[in-house]
Length: 372
Ligand code: AMP
Ligand code: MG
Image 1: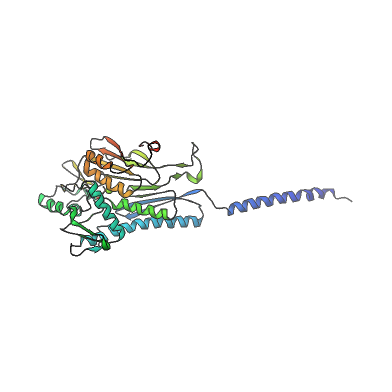
Image 2: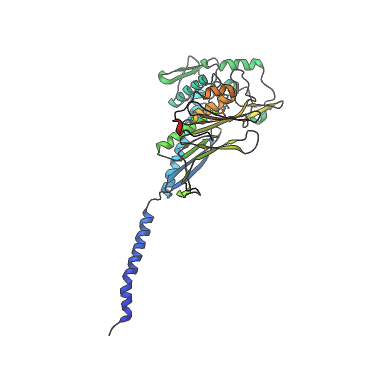
């Protein structure tokens, strides 16, 4: 007796089993394979340098462990910027800057190498800006109340004059040996015009030390980037691109919204100074939080917003943006050309926008891109 009905089962069972087995292996190996698509990790921080910070990185992998390591990298970058704040905050009595402010020429203080570095850069920008950038405006700043438009009149001459004298750059005494610093003749340091940019650079350096290839760090509007923006999960956009450049916007200094957005090349930094965030008004005249070190008066009119795009340094962009507001258009044009590949967008009091580009370039002429 034959059992024909059983034969097909015996014939077909092995292929079914084989297909199931292959499917299981494929499924299993895929689930074991590392996710190599770029994933975005993004964190906002409050309470740094009197403002907020945002750090964005793109990393491969999206497992719990990947997310945990990305969170640690982002935190390490933020901590690097916080360290800068801890050393350079003039309102923290334990900071290097407060210790220098409490020093005298006979009692210099030893400072951290990072503080030394920023002070050296401050002197460099003071020199290059013909005194417009001045790290010794601390006493002048104490004469004004920007908060809630509290300043009702300009301080009298007998108060401004000694504060202007104290801001003379020779009142900062620096001895390279042991990195010793002192201030004399009542001079007070204030690194508010440069420390945010340096904090951004410190955070970027930390991200690079972890091998991060695509990132953005922003502290209070001062920004620097690494690489570009991988499109979410590696998908291509309509043009078939898997990446797009990081972009940053320039705020309208006299209204809402943004006046333009700029594409940033790898490593670029962008910083903006102006009279639209912290200012007071007397008789309808607006005074910025940036002080003209020669007159001791807050800057009023002229350049109302200065955006600087530096190819390599947020400290440079930050210090030059502050300088541009003090120097005005014509003097700033000369300074710009002391730096390679620098771009500036200045908005003048009358609303005109002036786009400048350094004539000095390290790039071969054929590869140079036009300003956006
Ligand atoms: P920023 O917003 O980067 O232009 O920096 C402005 C801050 O820099 C002010 O709040 C002061 O702390 C400080 N500052 C004011 N005037 C000057 C100046 N002429 N040079 C350097 N720093 C300044
Ligand atoms: Mg600045």
